[in-house]
Image (cartoon, rainbow, N blue to C red; front, side, top):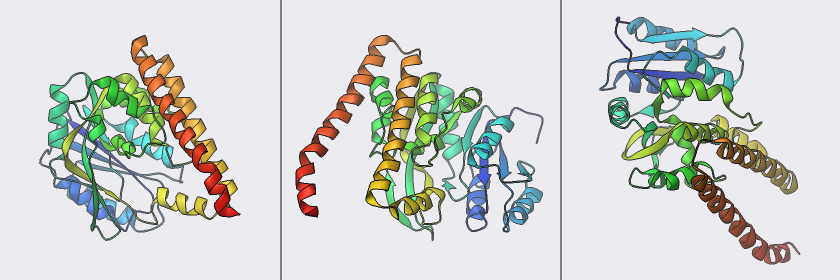
Length: 299
């Protein structure tokens, strides 16, 4: 790397990513913003991931490849990328996702002009295993045109139908994420695991989404999250409901704890807490009303 300040650090945690990692790496090298470092943290892959990454490393000095001696889990791998980051800004890139070529440039420009914002994201295109278009996701509930208290409310709500969890793949301030990441509340499931991180980032500053697709998010059966869902769906209905109920309770408790300890003004805390839990209560009543009909269908 040249002896100048690195603008963006990209952390790419991977385990056995030979199938898609070339697309991810090519999307990084195609960025219009060229002042970046790419940190690849390999959790002891057993496929061709190492060979692919070392080949790219030879071609570009901005790429750092680190292979760990054993698989230490996803949390370690994501955290290692944060620890090694030297840029002003930081983003994670899953080995099976793709960056649009203006992602770094547009998001870094936005953060440089908005000191109150600690994380900025564009919209997402969801793609399948063959990189074909599935659908677009517009993060309309976190636009800068909405007051922060309304955007903030979405980050302390779970489960959410808005797929807001993808915000963790936006561009953020490195100094902030280095402080926030070690404090993450660990849950046993992958499902919803982004929310403890996002509510802590929201505690540090504002999060915003800007219109326009800047990343591609891949959905396929072998992805870690989808694989977990397939395993849970094979359980009996009662066991499945119990697993998901515990997951929801853990995340909601953590979100409430982070909100109450935050430096937000008391009126904002009360607004977020009351509006979120009123929504939970309404959803509970709706399900309760539908319960007799559901029971009758089983008889």
